[in-house]
Length: 178
Image (cartoon, rainbow, N blue to C red; front, side):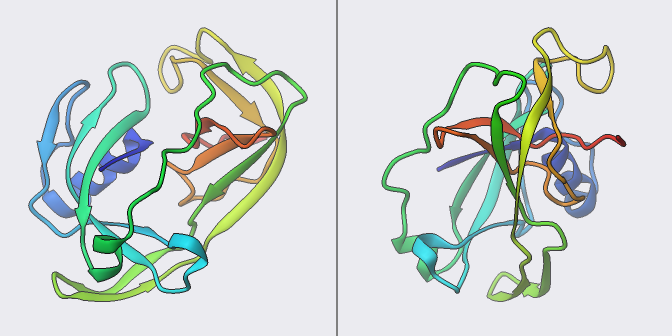
């Protein structure tokens, strides 16, 4: 299965756990460590764990795909029934959006046999305040993006942003001071 996340999240994984440079744009790298993606399927209070096997950056963006494999019994039996609907258009100024992430989440006592995970899910609601169809700047956000007024804490990067129709309309990439 594939996950879509912010490329800088994948970069951080490589720097922290692989002790090597992250993948370049368009490059795929394999992971040699047990780096996990955590999910709570169907309102379950026990997380399922997916091990990241490799990742690929999408050229010119802060997006990356991570190939994952089941890491425990729950993820081995749980598979998404269908992918989330994606909106390919940028939202308009004034539209309501909801951002999801896991600030403050940490793996505790983790090994290939499993472990404990401290999870702090967060959802924030906000409004689109500006849209940058050609990118916001030439260095940090040179790709199509938009700004929201919802609180986005460190650790929410890579989480989905949903529009008012329940479609994913973005991935959390950067939070900038107001």
